Image 1 (cartoon, rainbow over the protein chains, first blue to last red):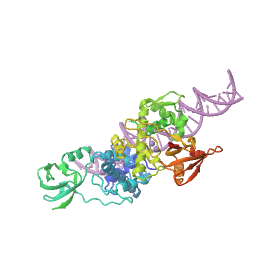
Image 2 (image 1 turned 90 degrees about the vertical axis):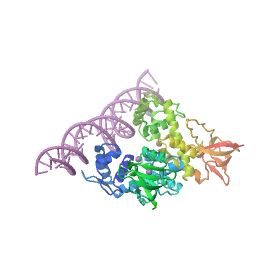
Image 3 (image 1 turned 45 degrees about the vertical axis):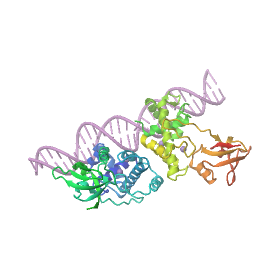
Image 4 (image 1 turned 60 degrees about the horizontal axis):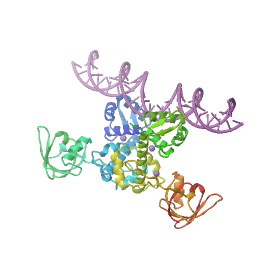
Length: 220
Length: 220
DNA sequence: AAATATTTTTAGACAACTCTAAAAATATTT
DNA sequence: AAATATTTTTAGAGTTGTCTAAAAATATTT
Ligand SMILES: [Mn+2]
Ligand SMILES: [Mn+2]
Ligand SMILES: [Mn+2]
Ligand SMILES: [Mn+2]
């Protein structure tokens, strides 16, 4: 039996290690999970005993194959529920994360597979992140961050890095959403701000914003 | 903050007391919750301290107004999720209970209200039980149990008492589902079994079955 | 009304997860 | 390479919810 808390730790380790490979250190986990390093150490030991993680004292953790399997499955569920909330229940993309954080722990293979089918097997969630299939396979997106986009080229918004409510609300108020088309007009060397042409307006966004917006090149 | 375990106890007390009024004794709760009487005593004390229940040592519990409010809200969520699973995700009525037992604890008013709207405000769940509205109001069904139905009259199946997987599978295999129309042909005085005319067959069901099937009179 | 049986509560302990404070290991500076 | 700073682990304790065994209260029989 795997507990809800163990699942959350495994997912965090997976995210911090960019695919479960890189070793992750205690403090990083503690910060993301809003807990103390000593609690993390305890849990890492437990995950190690249960064979979800490899751990050597003072050397950080990596996930085992089992651990990665668990992580990908939770991420699959999290992202499917996010699609459900946005497409069927009128949630906006800044409202889904917290609820999905709980729904992702419901254990029923039939539930997940039927939900997947009901949503017509979506491949990306409302934040542009890929949804693993039943076997855990997914292609990582060829995301380009706005800060590194080329002047003169045209892009489509396909995701965000920061999924905080504040950032997503900022995007909404500037008429930027998933799928929004934008042309990069100018990159200011002084403060790295970026001038963009949207469909009905030209706007300037700060470097903080440019670092957090993911795009896919369309032309240029 | 109310915990998942507290919610399950409150719901159990509510169900055992037929609307939260009648006092419920420790052993009854322990049996339903698959736990020991001593654990129940501990929890009852806690619910009492938190003002969800009224409790006098050795005298059983009742729910307070607050406790009833919590219970009805969980039941609302449980039954809405059951409708979702059956109507949208191809679950059969014997598969929904276990999953709904977990989904009922997800805390998000927006989620519940949007789900309610998405399902077009259903008033009964797949087992024929009424779904409380946002304010907690619902009319108890005018259920007639098959064992007390009249010979010669015609009824529609609107629910079951026993929701065990075994019983629901038995009904499925005999082509009895919610909405099935049946005429009572004969009640055998010797063993209280009942002979029924369904659409395409005549069948005899035992007293155990007749006690667990709820009907609504259509004619006769 | 006393004896007996049943129900309920208390006492003490355990598992999961958390915390603070202190010790140990590792990393960085000088 | 020693001193200092940072990170990580251990030790000990608290909370929630559970258990067993024993004591106390209530209910049933005689
Ligand atoms: Mn979670
Ligand atoms: Mn997402
Ligand atoms: Mn439940
Ligand atoms: Mn039901």
